[in-house]
Image 1 (cartoon, rainbow, N blue to C red):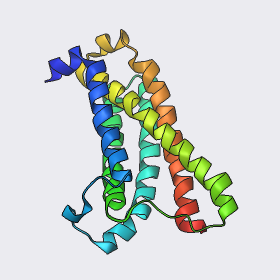
Image 2 (image 1 turned 135 degrees about the horizontal axis):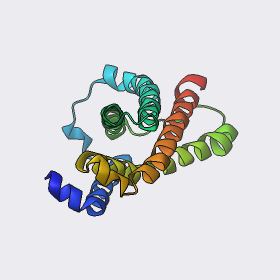
Image 3 (image 1 turned 60 degrees about the vertical axis):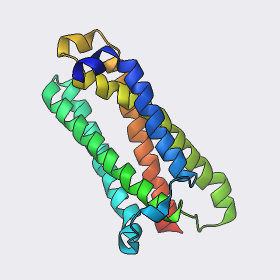
Image 4 (image 1 turned 60 degrees about the horizontal axis):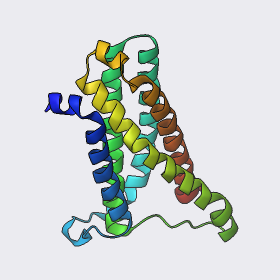
Length: 185
């Protein structure tokens, strides 16, 4: 399998991106049959707050992984990026579970704040998250299947730099969306 991914990084990236984004948008669109999912209101109420903590952990771990790469500590970089990806997967799993069961969060603040601050901020956050998906899958696929020497001949570093910046910005914006939706109003 590793050899197959190594030889087909772009195709694997495209397939994983379509599947992942399809799952996200079909969940947000209400196409996931929630009656088959267990409902636990206590957990559902905790998810936004837990995900805010996961966002902070992700920002810190992505930043640490970048610092490892800059210092040439490739093994630490790889382990920390895998950890960051795991945090993201947990975040997304919990988020999608909540959305499938109860839908997206309602903004309880004033309509003008919602229209001119909250929704534009949310849309930019979502757009960045969507853009990050193929970038992260590409970087991850290269990092897990190529030797250090092979990686030097790929676009891993360039794509990774863009992916990490957008990923961190998306997590930061998600945190601000959380504060607006769950704390401020």
